[in-house]
Image 1 (spheres, one colour):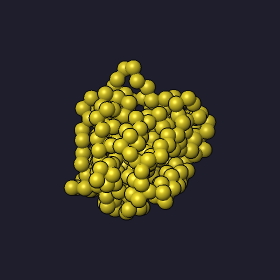
Image 2 (cartoon, helix red, strand yellow):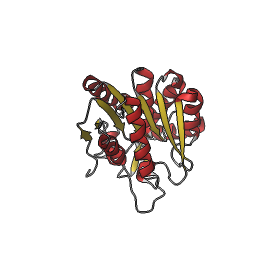
Image 3 (cartoon, one colour):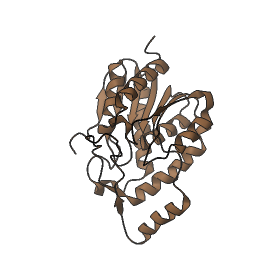
Image 4 (tube, helix red, strand yellow):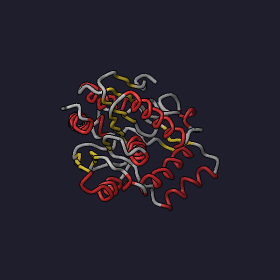
Length: 248
């Protein structure tokens, strides 16, 4: 899929891992990754397993595959850099929280409309019923963008069992948010049709003063490609530069 390639930039001794969302690819976070790289950091934005090719490639993947890839990328950066911050959009934010809970040395997290709680039980049951009926995919959830001429390059279908895997993981991550020790920049779209802002409420409540929350008033879920994209890039670069010490 053209535009879905991983992003990598060699910079200084401070690093940043940038993670894309469910059924998406690095295209959606390339602007943020580029802004952080321009600030002088070494940046990696990997393509997570099953993404950026075809829905058929994603059907057999699960949270364990995506988290293992994110962890491997983080450990590789940590071996090369003095400090590493983690940034994530949507499921990328879930993975960022997961890494922050597991690795207390993470310098900071930038979370853009992250998922940290499952959908209501009756909705989960309805999705599981689709699996029981033999269905493997449902309608796509990508390109929730207010700007009419922008698109995410995400899959146009959602693989159901991988989605259920993500929802289970989100609940586990959400239950451990208080384990995150680093500072967090939380960017929340007021009008999000994919991940309700209540997910951000959970993070802000669990972290208290460690969390700086910024409301995005003009953008939908994929805010990095929306009207607030420039603001997100600037805030992310400033925050990561500060928590890694690259700004002196």
